[in-house]
Length: 228
Image 1 (cartoon, rainbow, N blue to C red):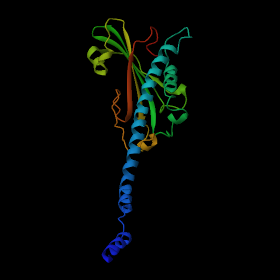
Image 2: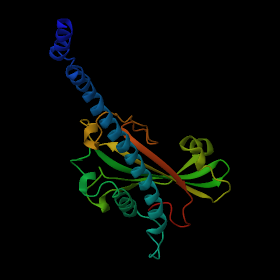
Image 3: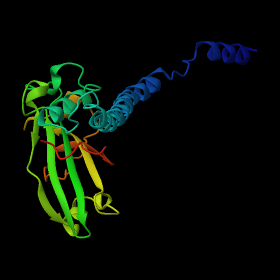
Image 4: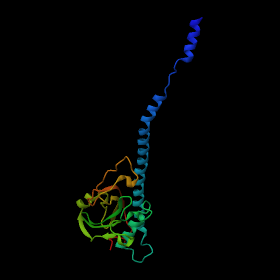
C-alpha cells in the first residue's frame, strides 16, 4: 500500500522534462538563416527589376529614335536628339536627377548607337553616337556623335553579326544601353542589393565597368541617319 502511495507521489512531484532550452537554441540558429534568405529574395527581385528596367530603356530609345523627328521637315537626327533620347529613355528608373553627379545610385546611364549602311558586299558606312548622363547635366548636353567612316564586312561582323545587311543601301542601328559604375567607390548597397554582387560586363566600346547591358538592333526609318 505504502509502495503504491509513494509511487503516485513520486509521479506527481518528479521533475518534468522541459524542451524550452532546445527550442530557444533552434530559434537562435534559424534567425540568421531567415534573415539571409530574406536578403537573397530581395536581391533576386531587385536584380531582375534592374535588368528589366534597362531592357525597357532600350525599347524606349528605339521608339524615340523612330519618332522624335516626326514633326520636323528635316528628319535627320542631331547630336541634341541623341542626348534627349538618352535622357528620356532612362527616366523609367531614374525618376529624378539621380542619373547625374553625385550619382545617388552609384551608376550612370549610357545609350550607344552603332549605325551601319551597306555600300557593297564588303563595304559599310559606319557611325557611332551616344548619350551619356556622365557627360553633362541637361538633356541638351548629353549627346555625342562621331564622323562617318568606312568599315569592312568583317569589322561590322565583329561588332555584331546581326548588323550585316542583306542588300546595298540597307541600314541598321545597334542600340546598346548600359548601367555603368559612375565612381570607383561604387557600392552594391546603393542599388538596393545586399547579398548578390552583380558581375561587370564588357560593352562594345571596350568599357568593363558596366553593371547591366542590354542590346537591340533595329532598321531605322529612311533619312534619320547618319546623325549630324
